[in-house]
Image 1 (spheres, rainbow, N blue to C red):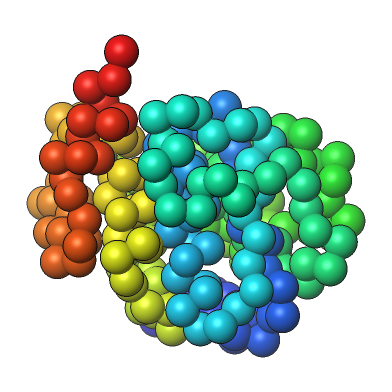
Image 2 (image 1 turned 90 degrees about the vertical axis):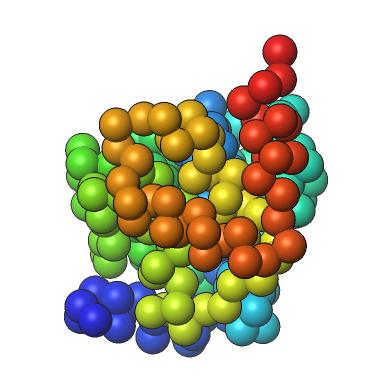
Length: 196
């Protein structure tokens, strides 16, 4: 386990109120990763807020917790975690509301600018959601049905139903792990990729 991951684990477990943020014009990986991380942090009893600079698209409103996402950063948040954002400017209007630097940056984009204090970036993964599947346990966080639903949504949408060139055997393995929980691949596919 890398020093960065160990440090991130220590910081997350020591925080009181964590705000998880994602990028503007959020896609399925942004929404799914923000909510997946939010629910995973709640498994260790953390107070967690979720923030996006723009509204959650209607086809992701079925995700648990989507109705609680705001475009604000709580004043009492003592830790900021960015997921699926390649650089700080992708956080849109949230940048103006930052009272402190981003503490932890979790992402899969090869263009990531390493804008946080701790940067956990794996550009080999097809989606940030895929990276989180393996990362959560290293951070001392647990998987459950809500986490799995959110992360599988991110994985399905960023790979266009496992059809992009970034889809690897590890991507399918991550999906397999998520499907051990009470999630419906059919439902996610129908709600996100088949909507008109």
